[in-house]
Amino acid sequence: MTQKSRIFVHGLKAHADEMWACGLLIASKPEIEFTEIIRDAKRVGEAADNDFVLDCGMKHDGEHYFDHHQFESTEDVDCTFTLIAKTFAPWVLTDEKFASLAERVRIQDNFGIAVAEKKFGNADEWIVSESVLTELFEKEPMKIAKILAEGFVKRLSDNLETKDAEAWIRKNARIELLGNGINVLVCETSPFKEGFSIAAYNTASSRYINEKKIEVAYGWNGDGSDTRTLFRTRQGEKYIDFTKSAPDVPVFCHNSGFLLVFNPSDDCEYRKLVRQACVCEKNIKKSA
Image 1 (spheres, helix red, strand yellow):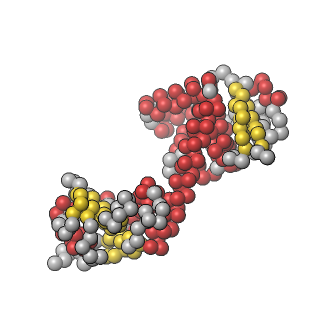
Image 2 (cartoon, rainbow, N blue to C red):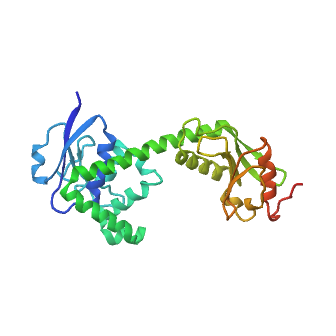
Image 3 (cartoon, rainbow, N blue to C red):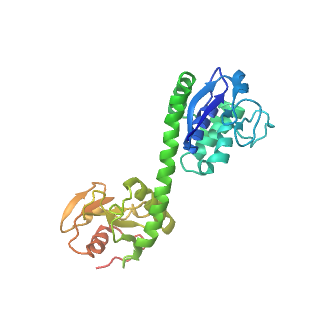
């Protein structure tokens, strides 16, 4: 039988702190059916043992009560969002997308918007977006919290897939140093036929490319066909230009020369194309 729980938060003006905390709590507890978000601190006494009290109640037990207002206001004091993250979703605090959000919300909630802006800058479009969300949270808290929860769930799913894709790359791809001094990441089987999404594979390969200082990636197109791609990475962008390459069966080449799509005539054609793409010496020896 599914557990049903309610979430209690303070009333009056909503803050980003408890809004994000509600979304993350819902995302982190899929086994619970959250039936209501009650925006009224005066009703905290109604909370049952299986309910959650966030950002009010002057109590933190790390189980059902998550308030931070009773803590000493030190530089590293938590907010309710970071308390929920530390307890149920520590990955959020190191995530490339959400870590800076959690820190900004923590600073803003404890020390004010001006201090947060001084540290993180004044991104008007973000402030407007979050302001709209918090205003909507005041009127329809559960609806907004579920939207944010979907974002957390998707991000976690993407992270897990990216981690699997990184492991797949390390197992199935190899690094080849061509005679012209270019490191090429060669993917010999299709990650997309293995079921990886383009987004997960691209994120994973980008991390691997940066780690290994690879200049060119050779892999498969994401449409499920045998079409291949050559992609110029940041390290090689000044001296590799694929508009200079001439594949036997071209499909597409971006006019800035960073992407080449082709149907290979043989398994070694990419080597010729990379050599043709080298447009200046830059401390490397050109091959014939």
